[in-house]
Image (cartoon, rainbow, N blue to C red; front, side, top):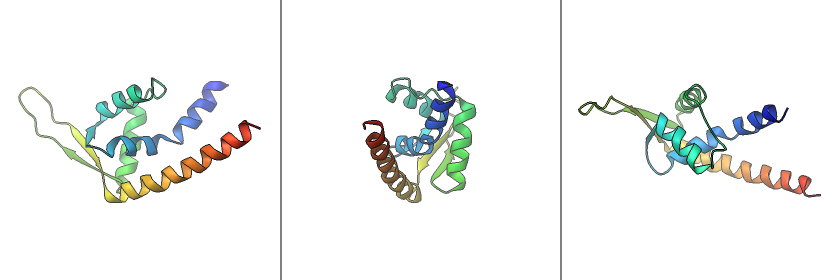
Length: 111
């Protein structure tokens, strides 16, 4: 039963976390997966099948933009994603909502 609730809770914050990771510089998919895992202390272990639908949805919202790199030597082209101004605004709004949710949950759980 814990796995079910853990998945649901994590799912609710993934858009925000992806936007946050893209805030500093453009990144490609595997880089996002690795950085999410590393920065979360292995709490967020995403698979490509989880990440790419998020990236496509964020692109549809115009919160991120993807651009293919050119192949260099043996390196294959990669699609790098960067946050847009609209995405930065969305991240700020989502971050405020997240802080309110955290505060409300903490108040209830600490009673």
